[in-house]
Amino acid sequence: MRKLILAAVAGTAFALAGCSEKPAETATEAASEAADASADASAAAADASASASEAAADASAAAKM
Image (cartoon, rainbow, N blue to C red; front, side, top):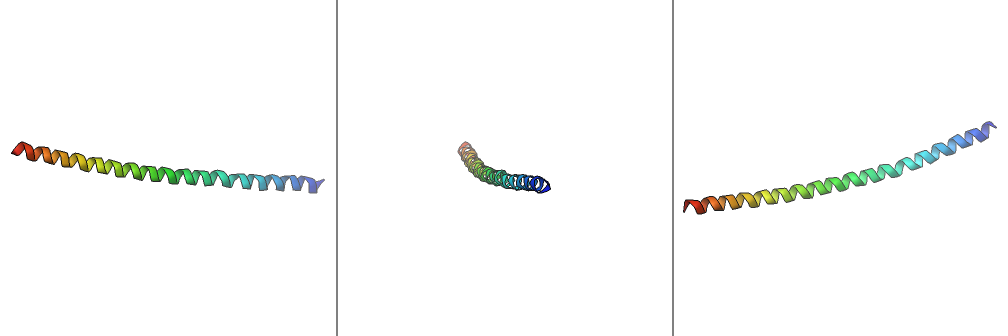
């Protein structure tokens, strides 16, 4: 009887240990994708800011003429 209960507990422990790895991998992948998306968005914002700055400089130069 003890062996049966011990086997059931061990089986449950192994099943839970195996299941906990998959969500961790998924969470890691999701975090990596979010970081990549954030970097892309940051680069796009920097490009837009540079373009706006150039446009403002051009407008200022045109106004001085």
